[in-house]
Image (cartoon, rainbow, N blue to C red; front, side, top):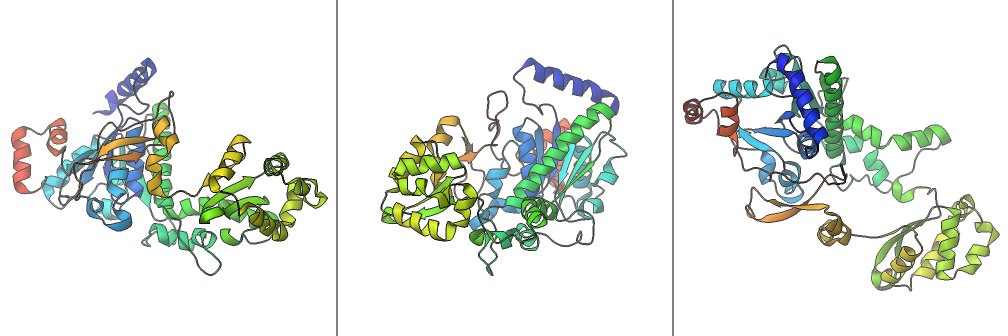
Length: 414
């Protein structure tokens, strides 16, 4: 699409959305050169919000299609609402097709090591001269600086960025139980892309956006950095933290069940005491205010644990629910498939698995945690089989059926 036609397309997208029914990013084309979690998360967010997302994979496919263990869920989770094009960038004709595709995009997303995309002429500098409206989102380990050429993983930045220290016990740093930096880094990439799209609507020009794992991790622990700045005391790891509230912890109760309980205001503390008949605690002047109770935690918490140990978790939950107090069962991820709230609110959606031993079978996946116009953005397209859309996309770029067949025969595309 030429530059002169872009403003008309932007206007048409706004009009369509305003007329109702279209998702916010309908009409935006995203070309995604990515793998693992960070880049695919960015593409998934943009795709869930209505963009046409074309995932460019190597001929052998994204490696996450066949990971085991903790990586087995990567591809089906982060690659819905996308089309798959398989190209060999090392083949001149495959690279030419990739370049033509990238130049057709509103947004290019990539998360390879520094210099990889430039080697193929597919970096921002190699594309922007021919498409000044292009928005190019880099997902990297570190923003430009002394660390930028290091190889980063979620674990790497959690360890060097203080998150593993805060999560584990003293002397036992522990990564968070999900790919928090990869996922949030992709989300920040999507936020940057959407901001750049808005600015392009004003200036008519695209720009480059950078999102990085390490800087994302620093943002996550920023509250603990500020705790030190405000108090002069280093933040303790979460298992040893000085809580801001007295009742704010996991309790082991009857039959070994566990439940998280909290009372984060003086009113909630009074309600808690009333709900369980702890009149002596409510009347104790040493526990009158939240800060009093925090100071009394060394003796108060053992007392509360003993008082609550004989209750069933379900009984405690019922009382907390009835009185509007915060509580939570200790759930495992697989139990969320049967969560009544997620089922009632449409928080999970069916997809068809594209790879592995369960290929072709259905599963439910978590949707974006937001509503737009009262609706959850859902699954419009399953995670695609490798190369499912190669020929259709190439023909949309102007390749004839004969040219597509020649490309396939040469091994440049799949």
